[in-house]
Length: 384
Picture (tube, rainbow, N blue to C red):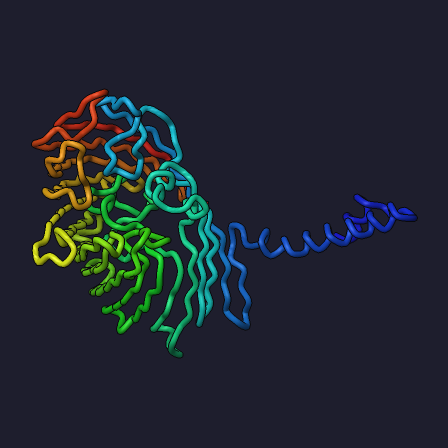
């Protein structure tokens, strides 16, 4: 390497020579510093003594969606945060991550772009809108079963994440779209046994990196997971906090239950139910309530092919989470069919047809509003 750098910048005399020598030293230093990063891309870097693993990874989800309502803004309903652009090819999520894992400490850093980031983090400061994850953790016991993690991390709520290839369907359920994808704060997690996991969180708010303006009250959360084996798992997650400034603070209490079931070698079932309540006004004993059930069945009918069917309902009559411009509250039922083809080991091709219907005109149709919506979305997702 030294010879290669020397060939690029041969020795000279005088002031120019001193400048060239300085450039050579800086370039050589940069190349030496870059070696571990280059070596980490696409493979693990392992220190045998410390048993430390550093890994780089990436994910890209490109999609095209067509909404038969043809909304004038080319944007699907504002309660959808993934694959929401109409009649254009876009990247839903372009993600680069670095992971560090060791017996007693760990760290994650992820940066992202795409229409998901643009829409879901629009309320965050501009410098934070591309942060997917930025957290570090330390084991608090010798068995590394008790961990404290701090920073920006994926939410403990729900069975669907922002990475579409990890989910049973291409688009996210209404429950997932309208509950936190990420949280910022501290998480204490405990693997009590192979079957039971527990967690407690203190966070900056309801899907917020920076707390809501004027809010000094942190949110808290809990999680209990029971895993019988690879075929059966149950989860209960909670959030208690507020999304208001102190002057008109309303308490929000939220529960998420879900189960995943491997019914047969080919059939997987997912069932979830969310229920939330929020004070109607500061200090009030009255609460507005919203809830949403979702059921998904996924069937592998060939080695590389899956079919998924989803039924869901979202009821928010007082507009706590979803507040239509009509002021009539929000109540929507949804049905979808999904077909997946795993073309290669790291590539997933998906197609989904999704219908949403409501008793009220809350879905955009051209320049007006409608009671139903039909959309078809195709995606190619790649991991690297």
